[in-house]
Length: 227
Image (cartoon, rainbow, N blue to C red; front, side, top):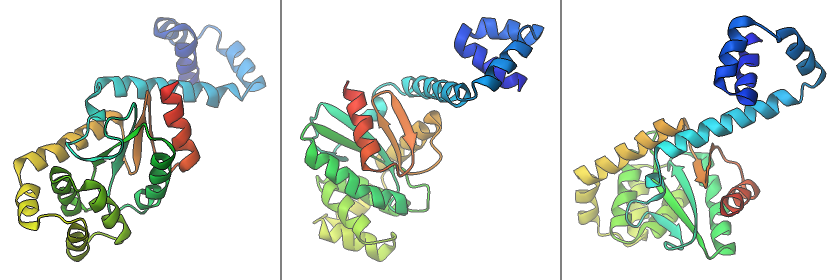
């Protein structure tokens, strides 16, 4: 309880005040009584603390995380609003979010959706093919074909690539290149900095969050980022 109180005082009075509070114990009884009478303040302040932490993490990766690997973007590549999606072709929740993203794009001609290939579930081959598709200007078609094909296998990856009209020889060469490896490593580094542990994960404005949150929450996040 004392640690929680320290965090709360840090939020209310700054960390210098919190240090004094923690060391002296002054006011613990009064604060405990107040919090017991107003328990709704605890989750509210915890959310505020977590949001501030996430904003600090996001600031550490600057605007770089919002810049796509050339071609790995859906919607309007020059749009004034940006949503970043960390995705994995083996992730069922990522697959479920495809329709939400398509709907957002259909409703908002200014939306740019940056896709960051984040293969944490063993789908690195599909992710490398995705980067090759982006390099050939075929990313949108491959992305949709890959998610429509079900779990990634050698057969489904090749089928999605063929459906997207990808030059397979060039794609195989690029997919195994140092450039593709560096891009994947960069995305993993961003995810570590942001504290992302799963997919899909998202960035909209100053907000970074995880999970299959659904259309309405994604729309609200993009709208809040624009306000």
